[in-house]
Image (cartoon, rainbow over all chains, first blue to last red; front, side):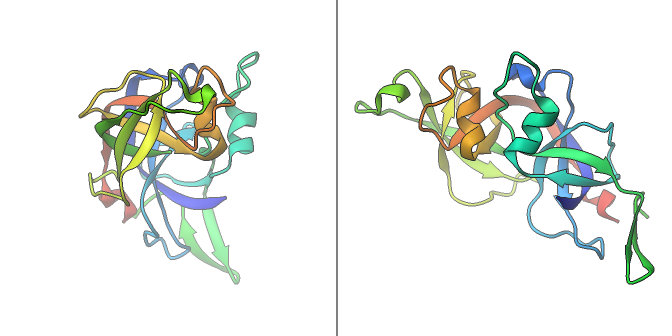
Length: 102
Length: 93
């Protein structure tokens, strides 16, 4: 799981049916200092996250399958999901990063 | 999953049998600001995307999951055609 900041979203009409009813957000990986790390990517929202939220993202197929699979449709052509909205990250007893952007 | 722009098509006469009928497109990956991210790649397209479209794509085992035959030997696949997207770096603080 990686820490990311939600910075936008992507809207599609033509898509695989498993994505229906789920928002696709643009997320930017960040370090524990809140600074961007690497390129942004797309992640399917499962927790009603919004722009500015600090979130936990998984980039792994089985995680996405557990959350997004709609029986009997077992195939999920996706491997990145927003799993949680982070309130605070604490490092060595001190608050390093808080959820809402400054 | 990432954003990419469709920049062309790829036509192959000889294909592995389970790839027959699978459309192959050339896509240029990019980030939320439109900045190219790595070299163009060839992606399987079950959605009839066209040149100039912005698409969402996945890599790995999941790429084949969107195809009619989920056991096709494919490692890059298009999963959605994007109508609109935005990303604002001001949210990074």
